[in-house]
Length: 381
Image 1 (cartoon, rainbow, N blue to C red):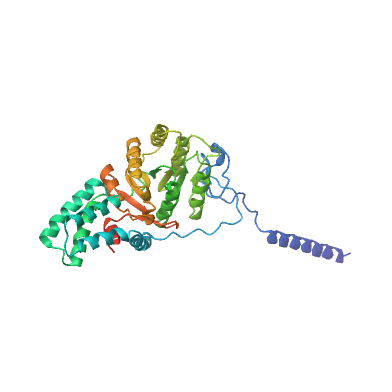
Image 2 (cartoon, helix red, strand yellow; image 1 turned 90 degrees about the horizontal axis):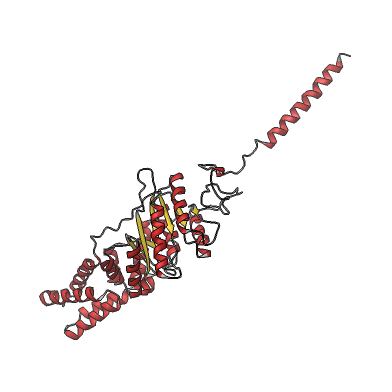
């Protein structure tokens, strides 16, 4: 009789220890979602994001994902500028070498000066700038001579730098202020590499440790939002987009800025459409986007993307866009595919707006700040 309680106690102890071991093996219950959001999705309009890195208008919560892919590490600004300078020297060498060869001749007569002017015009420098440069060089050659090739190169460099104008402010307005992110509107016609430029610029900003939000306001091109989301996802940058193709671009742009404010981002970059049925419609749309966005925050930067290979056609585009929105800077893409580096001078003179960024190549980090002296040195390398 006395042994029965002892056996019972032993059995109870074994059962209790077994249950405890089971609990410990299972561990604590995992929370649902696995994504820290600054706001509840119930407070927002629209459904959940469909892909990591996407924010639908009014949505800040991403779906549960078992594992995140490793993010790209963007190249630093200093590194990419050195690499792009070498590439620019190769692509535009015909322009620089042609001028140096003409100016280094033993005898420079009027026929040579006509050839120099033609070279400048073919490089898309523009008529006024070409004539001005030829006049200055003619005077200097008469006074200083052209016997020493090194002196000729120094003389040409000095005058080209003046034309490119290093006094222009080429800094990007991408600093957060008064608890509101900087807002950058990117405009341009289709085919110039506008969406790609937004993605590449996001990489530049991430390399500078800035928090970025992208806005896919090109709602008329089905692949634009997907393309932008892919660029952002590579570097951990979210994209605000619409579920509906052809949705109001101004609404998406506004939601992008609101998301940027709520996420305490440093910069919100908005990609816009480049084609509607007519030019007036496109310009009206851009004006509307800017007005609507400014209900949430000021637009700090309007970057116009121009394809450098289009020459004077790019000049026409620049004038039209500058009439619709207050363009603050130019991005020249595909500069590696042309020897027409003079387009830099022509556009700046026509608009009074600086070239701030240049694209040289298809690589993800083939975009860099524009530096006038490095640009001219590359031309004459």
